[in-house]
Amino acid sequence: MATVWMARMHGQGDFSRTVAIKRLLPMVAEDEETVRMFAEEARVTSELNHPNIVQVYDFMRDEAGRGLIVMEWVDGLDLGRLIRAHARTGTMIPWPLVTAIGIELLRGLGAAHRRVDAHGNQAAVIHRDITPANVLLSVSGAVKLTDFGMSRAMDRATITAPGTLKGKMPYMAPEYLGVGEASERTDLWSVGAVLFEAFTLEPLRNETAPTKIFGMASREAPSVRETRDDVPESLGEIIAGVLEVNPADRPESARELVVALSAVLREHDGPTDEEPLAELVRAARS
Image 1 (cartoon, one colour):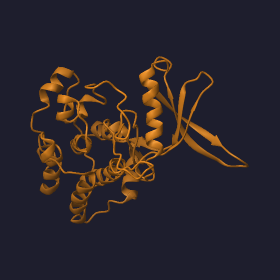
Image 2 (spheres, rainbow, N blue to C red):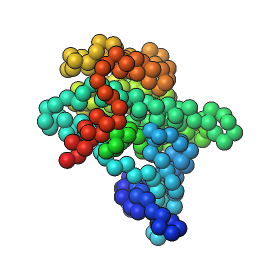
Image 3 (cartoon, one colour):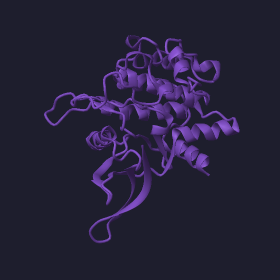
């Protein structure tokens, strides 16, 4: 739908900063629904001021009238690329670092879920497209959630037709695949699928055909400990809980999941701060 470019933004005097510019592709720039969704992405993300969410600085149009979103530039790679780098070498990502990535991702997602509007009313933003590609990891060890292009802000009428699925099907929660209803717990299931993949280096649903994915929707997720016996049993139970088929059986909020994952890390002696993650990112990028 869009391409992202690195650019340099200049201001008064010697002020300048590196930014990312996201621009609609020519083949969709005239599609009314796509244009509305692109503008909504800019509006929604600009209101989410959090260190674990990629920040939006401006929304404008180019000389051809195509929309442009000026965003924070994250120097690093996405989680999908990190997973592929480790899959090529057959080396697992250390489970404490995967857990730390999950905690930071959930903090950003929780901020979106807790959003309030200009009148102070609860107006959650449901992301609907949490995938490894939308989790950015910087060379300084920061974790940032990006791409709210499929998101739904609960203070706005829906832009897409009822029943329309938005996002990547392998990462869609069972209830979203079934009836197209997205909620905070739908996003949490997607986080679980992303973390499962980061732990095991294999996608939870290793299928791309829609009919096969629909057929897998009601199946119980395998345990990460089937692949990773070094993962603590308590951590395996947390991931299994967030991947429950019934949304009522999952954690209620991103914060609840942050608390649970943090408790596991407190029992681990090794470092899980920005530096070991930064080293991992730099190694995967080299």
